Length: 102
Ligand SMILES: [Zn+2]
Image (cartoon, rainbow, N blue to C red; front, side, top):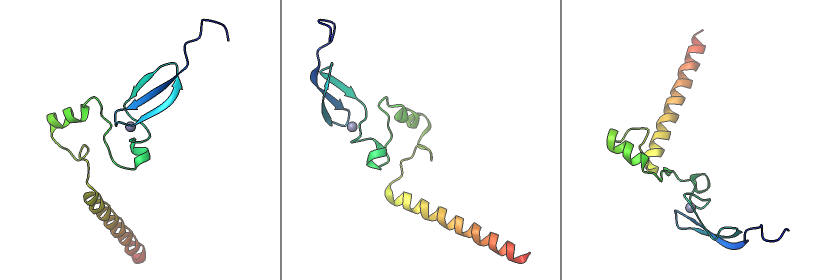
């Protein structure tokens, strides 16, 4: 390595908005991130609006809670899934009876 042109390589900390911290080596001592593998829905499997700028809150204040912005609870989700499944089964049945008539 050439002398005096490389930044210092130090032990750094990455701090997530959820509170989790990582230790790593970097040229920067401290870094902040909004989301990490400890809190990202892809890894947690939980529904969460990723919204550090408050845009969802702003939208809700302006337009009220809509179907699209509503975060469903587990029981509500279950109910919705059951409704969907029932509708699907009914459609299948209707198709079958139509086919039988022919
Ligand atoms: Zn996090």
